[in-house]
Image (cartoon, rainbow, N blue to C red; front, side, top):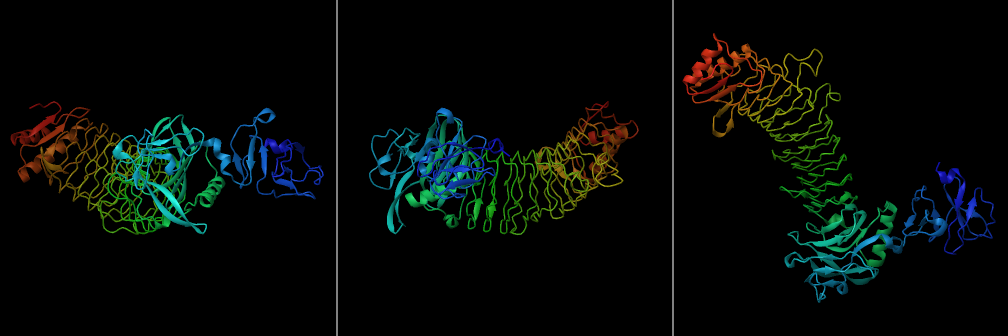
Length: 621
């Protein structure tokens, strides 16, 4: 119970009859006939009003009351801005009927495009004459000094035009401002940091944004899709009741369109780089087919202060590429259905505050684009777990999908594995897929049988060790699982800096390709570089490999002499079998052992005889 209720002190308000505000304890012992039009707050927090005969719980429209600061604004009531004086300096005034004047003291800027308030240039010397016309200055729409909207660059001025709208039984002339999405914008000089609500009236409807705008120059409209009829910037956050009442007011008195967002089909870049937006409303997006298509076209790309997102309809949306990219304050995402979506590239890339992700069905609308998951969750650095129940599209490439998800570790949530045991049997590209997943403690034995490109796939997964952090009872005989790499061609940096690996399994590298300094296939260059705990490496794994590129492959490891010999003899065997000359292999630095005299050194000699650069410990060229 609040202090206000607990102390049983209730302050009456004044109604339309302007009764005096007085203190009144509960229970009410005032005669209702004497105090007709007066109301109080009851012990249960309800309002009671005197109709002259009795105290009743409903106050008439237009009733106002004062409440102390520790009492919230009741549902259906609206706070009246302003500062009370005298004994009531810590009180707030609320009313049960919205009036625009209640927000006047909170109105920082009001872009109302009337001909009398618009000028051709930012100097404000020549008023606009007839539409269509470029606009360089819009005076804020009140008599009091407000923040104006201007554009000093001639080619960046938006355009004023007019339409006729039937409203309240009459044809009304509606003024609007349109931005061409090619650089046109308005600039406001914000005097102080402004946290509050922005009401935007467009030709398709009204919506309210939570905003946090820093002091200084603020740019509006650069990517706006919809013609703007009015914008109000308030230095307070409106409640849902206030927003809905405000919409009613704008529709009834200004003849605005309340909600026709169902007519909108394209929202590419609509709120792109709107770094001031903190919250976004529930609008009708049921007919939008495109939320982002092509790099840097996402609807909310770069909304760095956006903290929450509503469950908007994606019923007809074909692409959400980059839609929420770099929304760095977004902590979660709703379980939205994507029944026809084909492209999720970069959709949540860089959402560095996201802690969890829902188990969406992302496959139902997929139409064959194999790049549909590129970069999708890259850089979600605080994402702790990934849902096992998510349905991913059957793409053949997972390039960059979870790169730099530095906190991701499903070990406690997914049968002991740090990453879900997904079916990846169709995937052929794992290019940087888990690069930088620094919290992985192990890795599951996923089916990589069609994998061709393993470029930097597990680079910087510094904690993976399936022996110490086994995912299944009984553990794993190796630090890394025995996955199928028989079709793998490119292993550049694949396990680089996996600093917890101690032993490596006898994987099949029969398809490995790449020539030193030539082409995009890099063989095993840097593949195990920096695996500073790696001591054990099996024999014979490179016998069938057709690459001469092992440059810095084992630099900085801790390989035993037996492991060093295993590697050198296997590489020498493949060089002899496939006539691989002028290659390079490095097994130096770190705690690597030197090759043995009986086995390792003859292999080194054989490779050097073929023109190879061989850098090993204790046996220089």
